[in-house]
Length: 87
Image 1 (spheres, helix red, strand yellow):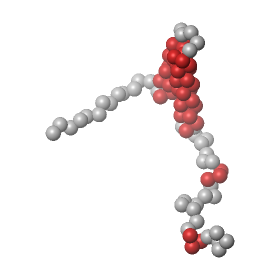
Image 2: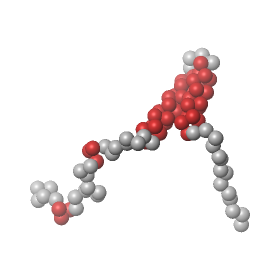
Image 3: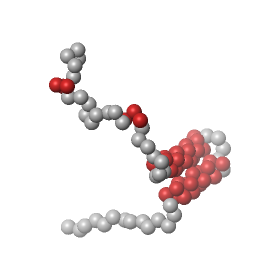
């Protein structure tokens, strides 16, 4: 039995840089095409890369706060025995 080894890639650029480059490549490729489904696909992929970069920036920001609606929630909700008789 042989053990499979994971292919590991050592990145020289940050995740944000790679996403920005990918978005730029898709936008450039879309600019070379006439209007049609392939061009729309490239533009969609560029938007997805931009959105991923925005999400990553938000998730890694030092001021990230949990949504206020979740502060008062109980894990799993109230137990059956804790519910009011009107349930």
